[in-house]
Amino acid sequence: MEGENARRIHRFNMIFKSSFFYLVGFILACIFLFPLYVLFINSFKSLKAMLTDVIGIPNKATFTLNNYTNAFQALGSLHPFLISLIITVVSTTLILLISSMAAWILVRYKTKASKAVFILFAASMLIPFQSEMLPLVGFASRIGLMTPPGLVLMYMGFGTSMATVMFHGFIKNIPEELEEAATIDGCNAVQLFFIIVLPLMRTILITVAILNVMWIWNDFLLPFLIINREGWQTLPLKTYLFFGQFSQRWDLGSAGLFMCIIPIIVFYLSCQKYIVKGITDGAIK
Image 1 (cartoon, rainbow, N blue to C red):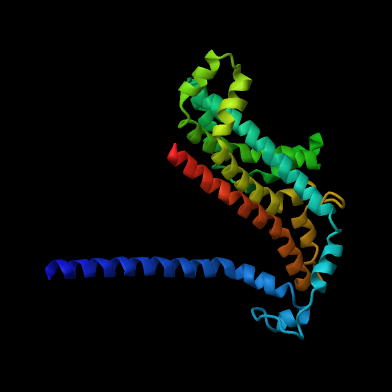
Image 2: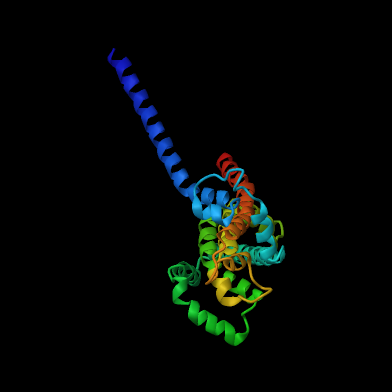
């Protein structure tokens, strides 16, 4: 009887803990998804209906698709989307390439200089952007970097530090014997990195890519300081035009903002399975 009671108590405790964690997860999911819910339902309402009932689901009288059509036209069709896409893809690609190569060199060449450089990379992440944005803008205006290529260069400067630190920890787990065997077979340094090391870093590459794509695509402050000109504006800058000093177009702004986050959601969901698969493959090996 005592053993039976102990098993029942243990089973009850397990069920209680599992139910408690599910409940906490559900509550946190509702809290984090509530802003998206408000943004989504209000994108289908007129401005009057939105101001009357913010969190209510639109009915037949208030439901409209004109917000998306008008917002798409106000944003300038696909031009700001292409600007954001080019800046995000080019910046993320360069960050991944430069940071992974730098981390590989810092890990494999164990010298005092490599340790000092790695400390500089790690320490640079402690400097807040707000403390350097005004000197950065002044320096960029003097040397002619107030352009989209200049913005890409700045994203590289701000993004390589964290990416290098993340790559540095991952490369330590790659066996050096693989590189030694490839070197014996005649691989030079470039072939060694791109043929042997880089494919093994697929998991961390996708993780770093997701972090940088989300940051660069959604960034508002740096493009606002550097390329806030007609024809160069990214999607976050164009959606800001819906909220002026004398008019607040929340109906068009909601539709525009929701259109902006759709590519990020699609990108994250498409890459998530590769992250899980990479972790599983690494565990099996």
